[in-house]
Amino acid sequence: MKKKGSQQNQKGENNDCFYYIKRIFNFVFSPVTWFYRLQPIDKFTAVLCVVGIITAVILYETDQTSRLRDRAFLYFNSNVERIPYPPNSPKWWGTVVSGTNAGNMAARRVQLRFACPFIDKEKPDLTFKEVDCELVKHSTVVGPKQTFSFQGCEIQLANVEKAKSGDGRIFVFLEATYLDGFYLDTPRRTEMTLRFYFDQWGGQSLGFYGPHNCTDEDCPK
Image 1: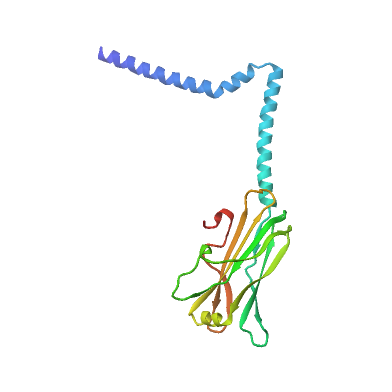
Image 2 (image 1 turned 45 degrees about the horizontal axis):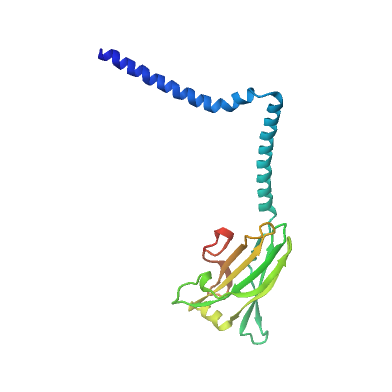
């Protein structure tokens, strides 16, 4: 009797399993069954709706790709030019900063900021939030593929000598905020941080430094 009861229970479990498989099968293929029961004109309308949805998705993805390709994109050139002045007995370095709009749309409401702090060797490095950047251009437009330049920091040669001897560090902070030509409520941002490096033979160079070499959402908050 026990053996017969166990066989009946197993048979009932198998029936339940087939029942759920049938339900899943009917659920998956119910749109196909529904489609074949339609009248020809209704089938034609349904096909048009599906094609329309697929076309809308393709157009949306194409539009997003086009925006990424054509949007305005400002970046700074890393070769900040240094001009000692006055020429006869210089006491300052004047810097010239340049950049480019690499996009196919004009960058609007462009604001450019810069700072060149000197930091003593005992003090920690500064972040963008701790630097008092000077605003040099406000509500400027930079056209597609257009370059731009502006006079940047004035650096005391006395601080340059300290940096050469290892008694301090000189940084260049650059920031550009703008609208990319598509999204009027989403400001774009480019940040660049450089540090002056000196060697024992009197050579000098600029190198990227820290996390603030970024664009848009990649920049630290």
